[in-house]
Length: 237
Picture 1 (tube, helix red, strand yellow):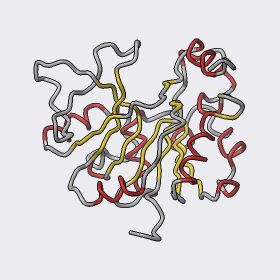
Picture 2: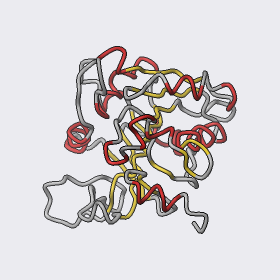
Picture 3: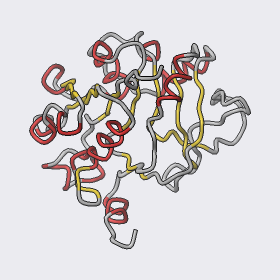
Picture 4: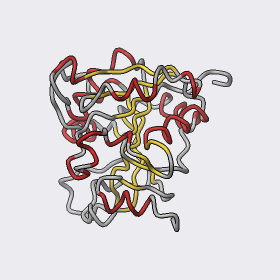
């Protein structure tokens, strides 16, 4: 509705970043510099620009660095809350487990974005959030063309933007871009503190006919390797 703030957002930032070692031995991956500022700040700036006011960041690896670097979010006009999996559970709970732990901070629906993707042109569009609220879906995904490191892709979608079951014999031309809108129903079957990957919850939502998607064909990088990081930080790019 006009004048209402956009939905809250969850930035997933708990992972170890194994493939970016030794950079991540001392710095969490979302705090690594991309084009002159920590990767996660690109998300914070975009969320603030698009009317989000409440942001939850889940943390585990070197998690004390996040509040030290980002504070309470006031410099962006945000209120940042930290969901500390390391402190509370001894380590990262994976994506679905981290989401389930953070649900009390997130309300009826929320944006989700991984802290290690660089997607500078994406808009956290309030109109998209309102369309999602008007549906009964548990999730709405943004999918990207399959990158070289995910050649077989994650999903196929039909003409209505419904995500198709993986067991169907068809090409999967799209990869989950790690940006989505979710309702608690996506993960509320998990007890808080459970360690769980997201894909089984996604498959469950597909089986119930509750997962939709659209494609994003703008710039997108999973900053998962030194080579991809170096490419982004190359002044020619």
